[in-house]
Structure formats: structure tokens, C-alpha cells
Amino acid sequence: MSNVAVGKQVPDFELPGTGDTSFGMADAKGRKVVLYFYPKDNTPGCTSESQDFRDLYPEFAGSGAEIFGISRDSLRSHENFKAKFEFPFELLSDADETVCKLFDVLKEKIMYGRKVFGIERSTFLIDDKGVLAREWRKVRVNGHAEEVLEAVREL
Image (cartoon, rainbow, N blue to C red; front, side):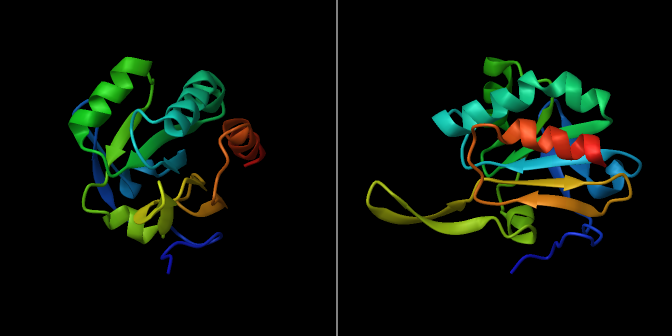
């Protein structure tokens, strides 16, 4: 069960990020934030999604939004992924799944014929007051970053 809901304040959390940074909701006051949860660094869908956010980053920034990618991968993995694809935004490590559970993005999935528990690709748009404005669950990568950008512009 999710602890976040559209129209409600997002509870505070803090995660370590690439570039020797950290991010928490307290840091986001006054800024729009896009949090996109993805299953794993350097996998085809996750790479495409992250590249789409990278390519549209100037438009997101111009609309006053910050982007953060979140997965359960280690900071070391994130640093390599970020450097390899030149992402202009930070990636956050949720190795203990605290924030994944907060946003209820951990789901049972079938991979290679086996049941696994992993991140369901999801994106959350938080307004400049820390309120969840929009959510996208069971995300399909194609066209997703553009749809999120349009929602940012509408805020």
C-alpha cells in the first residue's frame, strides 16, 4: 500500500545520490521534482528511459523541474551508469528499498519464467509545495518523458 497519494504532501525521505550528493523532500521546497523509479542500471528499457529524460533535460530545467532517477542499484553502479550515458541529473540509490516501499513500486514480476520481486517502472511529479501532482505507474518507455514534461509545463 502506497504512502503517497495525488493531492497529498509527500512524506520526507532522504537518499544518497551520485556526485556525492543526497536528496530529500526537505531539499525540494520551492522546486518541482520528477522522481522516476526504474528496475536496473544498464538494461535496455531503463537506459532508453533515462536517455529520454537526459535528452529533454534542458526543457525540464527550463520549466523549473529537477529530475532524479531511483533504483535499488548501488551508488557505484549509478556513478558508472550516469557517466556512461552523460546524464545531467543525479541518480539515487534505494538499496534498502525504503523509498520504493513508500511509493509502492515494488511488485512481483515474471522474468525469464521465474517470479521475482522488483521495481515496477513508475514516475511521480511533485509540485513546488511538496504535493504529489501526478503519478504514472506501469510505465511504457516510448513517449513517457515527453508526457511527463507536458505535465510539468501544466503545473
